[in-house]
Length: 149
Image 1 (cartoon, rainbow, N blue to C red):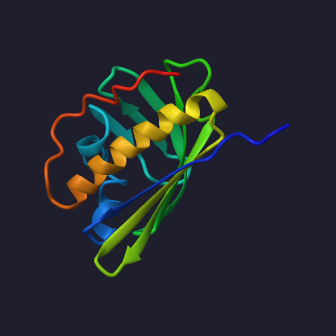
Image 2 (spheres, rainbow, N blue to C red):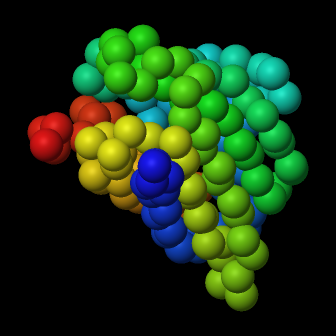
């Protein structure tokens, strides 16, 4: 049996890790870059719930939170039977660089037929996260327009 694919997406942002971390640990901050509404409680066991611009709901819970360095949470979908809430794991690392931060997102335990769509989604959302962490407005989130394979 082969291991499920791992999706890894990286994005540089011209902002310190603390500025990026703020958008990963507050509901209103998260909603600025992903989804229409967020309800997050960034402590181990705390809820992770995002109402996406597409109307779908992501849900899971926080596993690990290291200030200004890393957040790890489970993730799944209320609207997709193949990826139930909490069935995958997302790790977001914030790596300091001379002129900002490297955001490294790793999404594990995805079904193979979902990895391409989630990669495209995370590329879209890390761009939006970089925009808000740099002090700019990414505009409304309309979701990712790619179709499932």
